[in-house]
Length: 321
Image (cartoon, rainbow, N blue to C red; front, side, top):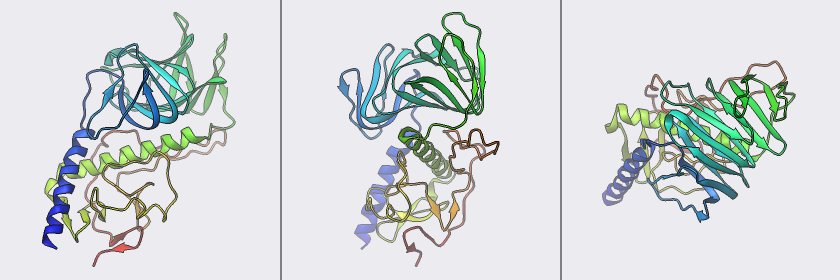
């Protein structure tokens, strides 16, 4: 029994070390492929996943998806999420002047608070989209249109068009004359669902990592194949749980892939109480006049979440003894 516990602890600690390293990755260039699943290609080369290793898209290179999706870290706090059968080209990888071109398909951008040291522009044909404030955006190539799901965007015709502002709850057809419209509905498809899961998993990992940073000794192993995180309660040890342990209890969330919550395929909720500091991502309800909670922007929350007392168990019928 003791040997089993020791092996569990070793696997947990080694996996956590890899996980923290992965979440702490810093790139001096824009275009880091942060996450992908399915058939995704960098140029003509299919991507392969390696724990703790990330690939940058070189300037001028293309990233394309077939039956797959990809998440690209453009600058700190700004993620581009690419849908199936879509492609982008990194036209400039300087963090102070990042430019990425949508070639075909659909992409979503989730942007954090702007920084004076970084700038991101999304190009499509003869138009340039910039993000002066945090928010959530979508751009489609067929039909060509920008959706501002949250925040605001500046759009200009290349090379010297006067920028116009597209505000929260509006969309903009790409045409010779740019005229924003009030949206009657927001896109609702597989890309939206996947982007939702990706945003939730990043925020969950950052909240857990913040807790580990504050008290590394608090992460301990016990009860054979279970690990105790103070802010989460009892959960299966990393690398040891069955992938189906919890997936039948709550609906599957596409895109949810937390490095700290193996076996979970949805936003973790313990006894009906969300993780403190973890505000669920919710798309806006456009055209209804109803304000909805705004989802979190990826990367470490400020201030960091404090510890949560044990809650007595987790979803799936596993309880403290």
